[in-house]
Amino acid sequence: MKLPRRKFLHLAAGAAMVPAAPRIAGAQAYPARPVHIIVGFTAGSTTDILGRLMGQWLSERFGQSFIIDNRPGAGGNIGTEEVVKAAADGYTLLMVAPANTINTTLYDKLNFNFLRDTAPVAGVVRVPNVLEVNPSIPVKTVPEFIAFAKANPGALSFASAGVGTTSHMAGELFKAMTGVNMVHVAYRGDGPAMTDLIGGQVQVGFATMVASIGHIRGGRLRPLAVTTTTRSPALPDIPTVGDFVPGYEASSSFGVAAPKDTPAAIVDGLNKAINAGLADPNIGARLADMGGMALEGSPADFGKFLADETEKWGKVIRAANIKAE
Image 1: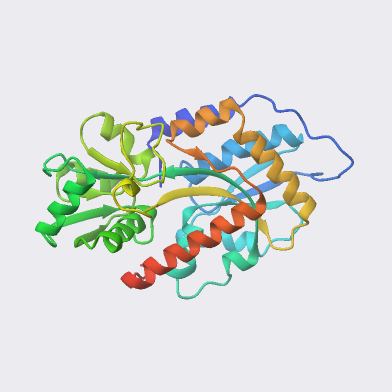
Image 2: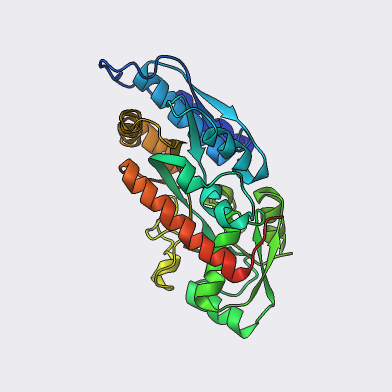
């Protein structure tokens, strides 16, 4: 997802303002040279912003440069494959994006298996998507929306930022769990999807908080619920979809991974440093700007999270027979 320029500059400035963190001292040699964090998406994307935020923190924490390398293409697969093929020495890391758990099933043929070929390091943040409608739709709650959609089967279209994006997956999961019939319309990114949603060419969206919040605050879209299991600090008065559809959860989650067989001492050191960053008030404020909630935990916690997400989205993709474009 590409961020609006003003939002990009604001968050990027926030990354640069992270204060110097206490350096990790010890006998270990790592890192003895610059570390590269591979981002499988363009500069200005959410994944890129988060990579730069954590890279700045880790650079200060370790006293060594953590450099962001953008490797966009194939829905993030190009960057992921580069990390999979890299030496397992801790000097090449992957900024994990939602696409990593989706692409495993979405693409028929990949040159790697994400869960098998990477080592989870740490989660970073979970960002809600928002179930939102054009204000012309006469509903204000999730139950009203479900009733309206069932009374008008096939009459509603929901926009996404593209096939296999979280805004697409969130909509398909909602359809599967509620039985509503909506037509999916895929766009090339959040920008055109939001333009048509605001213009009324499509009626429903499940866009990320970053793409949605300005239009919600401006009254151009009506939020019905956030897609995480808890309310978002960015929209504290808006309920969750799960309040009305038990078990529903869909979000854009990010973290860090390394090539498989990366030494446990390196993984654990990075995990502790990233978790310390998530506890830092300045980084917390930057994540809150995105409507995000920190995704703390051990490498094993993040590994289980990735496996669960891969299984969940695999079921949705197979049930809806979704294919990569």
